[in-house]
Length: 94
Image (cartoon, rainbow, N blue to C red; front, side, top):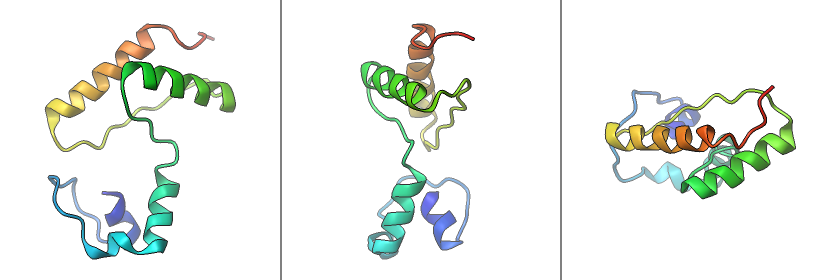
């Protein structure tokens, strides 16, 4: 999806497939890394640690969570993990 934004060839989220050759272009790699700088992945423990650090560093008071995962079960699992982390009240309420 991000590659489509960078190359201006946008289309709906596609099923996983081999990446096109343009993916290996250094400028494309830099743009992708910039776009995904604040991407958090991993276990509950990893998310808890990384999201806590992010909130502490930025002093934000709101998180907007999105998940660009093609497989619906995997997407729901992702949101379930984030929900569990948030329910553990790792962030101080306002």
